[in-house]
Structures are given as structure tokens and as C-alpha cells.
View 1 (tube, rainbow, N blue to C red):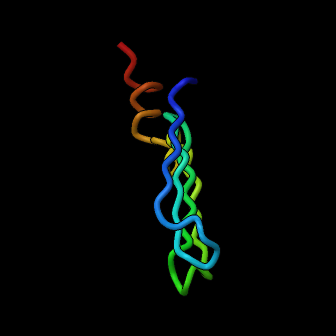
View 2 (view 1 turned 45 degrees about the vertical axis):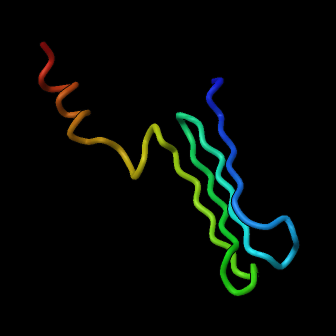
Length: 67
């Protein structure tokens, strides 16, 4: 895997808002600390190969409608 990206937005000073994102074709990681004087963190981690669960319709077609 050679497609890994890192992005930063915001301050480098403690107590100031900042955000970063790490992304590849298979994973996304976000860290957001911009609320309440950078005293309230939100994070997200997503598996981009299986985002929000299984693709049941695709599985059905692959198993039941083979050419």
C-alpha cells in the first residue's frame, strides 16, 4: 500500500483548535479538536473496504446470480 495521506489543519499551539486526517484506500482516521478552546475531541475510524457494514445485495448477486 503506497497511497497513505496525512493532512493537518489548525494550530500547533496547545489550547488552540486543530484537526488531522490519515487516509489510505482501506482506512480513514480523523481527529478533530476544535471545540471549546480545543478541549473537546471527536474521532472517527472507518474501514473503507467494508464501510457501514456488509454489502448484502452484492453478496446475494455473487452467490445466487452467477453467470
